[in-house]
View (cartoon, rainbow, N blue to C red):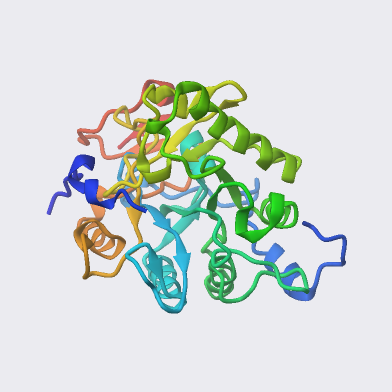
Length: 337
């Protein structure tokens, strides 16, 4: 079965919706030890790309989450049990999380034979992340569950990109939560100040929504460097390129609400202004054909279509007969086989 990407217009119905200064606890130290390690000079050479079926021009699922709650009330909600089950599936199927910043920068570094997946969370909801009195993530939040799954699956990097508005996670200014996330390898992205429909705003108002939120993120967490935006409702400003560049911000990628996997950032067809995402969803329900369960099934049934790493971040390996073309920026790294 050859996977065909779904035109985004077909999924129009989807458009709705620190550190505390205290000593680190044993749990926090354990979670810190899960931070991804780069290959060292003593690491063995990566295998022959053909031996692992490398295809670094293949499709990458960018999964989209909102609330993680015991009683889901909409298709944008998932229960903690369902969220955990999806992460466990990804780990079993040899997916390795990378951040949106890494993905759009083309710095994907996962083991040979593994597949990158981008975990994204919109709106800064407290069900995604909250710190307890001990300074550790609440266990039933998305971040707490992700860290727990990573402990059980050491190759499953506990990283994700959280797209926030003002007052993220119920934390005024984000001064407690955002520094913790950055210190533990998470990526913070822009979701505008007020979750505005940017198409309904003037150019000045749209750029203020983006630039103002960028400024707040940087203020809350010195050292923060947002490089991507998740467009509220998946809608661009009327002048589309303002999503990526305007007074006070210059981004590498704009993520949609979307309906299908993304092309590889190394593909000539990759469009940083319109990166599709897949809503996390069970195999049944409203528009389930665009959801994560169905898409993960499709990718599993057609493994040659998905991005499979060759284990060497300095080269881009793919079958010589692949019809996908490499983007001009990466032609000096190609390794067809």
